[in-house]
Image 1: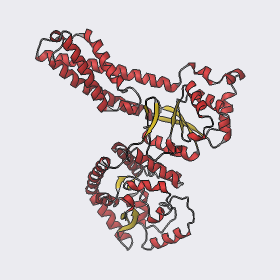
Image 2: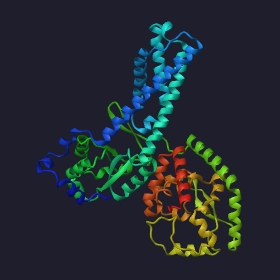
Image 3: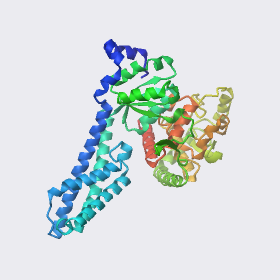
Image 4: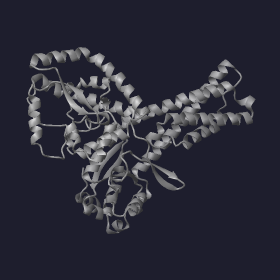
Length: 486
């Protein structure tokens, strides 16, 4: 929903004049909902790890005593063992947000470091009467297995709970309408419903900026835990804005849409107390490209073999339905601006290309989505079925095998579309175009502005991972199976 003056008046008219003059800081004595959930989540993971570490050591003692028969289980030693182990995990910031909690390589290092500390202490104090080497080795192995499995299961449970809208983080978006649209789509795709977007504030409206104290009070009353600012330069007094949120226990996140920096998403690092913006090398390049290419080759080859009988059936139906070729080949711009032929099942009558050229010649609009058209270009009967279920794109698996395309990536554009590019648009040519992508699974019929679609492509490039590719592919399958229109 959009935030408006009506929301403020309906929620603030109940407060006295003295409360409004004092503002939110006096109400912020009690922790906000977001802070409470954060603390409860942290305490929950600490208790879970404490239980799992205790079980790991008890199991190690049990197995060692069965084999060696000389070392008895000593519960009194569990307290210092658990404290040292949990302190090592906490020192690695593995009780923070989800991204930190799921760094399993860091978790392994922390558990190993804790085990080394315990080994040194055991060596210095009564090594013969307390521990054996078998207990240490088994406890280390069980710690790795139990704690890692506990994290995986816990995260899976959290995702299930969030999908029921029970444990979501309430947030608000602030910025221009174009920036907040991109932010909403990105958050809904990658967050597993971690964030519940309660609304947005249009900073292009001066009235909203002038009424910030009342807006802040409204956000506090709604239990908003975080504000995502998509247009930082639109904030009149940025420092006062920051401290007002800090006083109200509301977290602030600044999205890089309005910052004058390269398209790569930055990482903020402190060096000697001075904040710096760190830009890593381009995504989906070098080793990342090899990993992505290997994944594409294996998956696309598997699907080609799996669907071969189905593809032959479609080809036969196309040939029986109307005269003409089975496959249509169109020129597209690929990696580093090189042209290639994209494959699709023919869904139009033979002279459809001529009709399309006539339609494009009549279109003088520059700010349009160039790869989409809503005109009916005499689709065949079989073609209607293929387009309804997006089956006409299946031959593009051959393009993926050949290396012209990727399974997931930016949209393959026509050479004519590149003529309208601005200098910053050419960055998307550094990666292979994809059969599907972030734009295709994010409700593309509602994204009619080319710049917004480009930002979605950049969001994908800057956040690329195999996990994200798999997530987009699963969402694509959901669109196909449920007949959801993009």
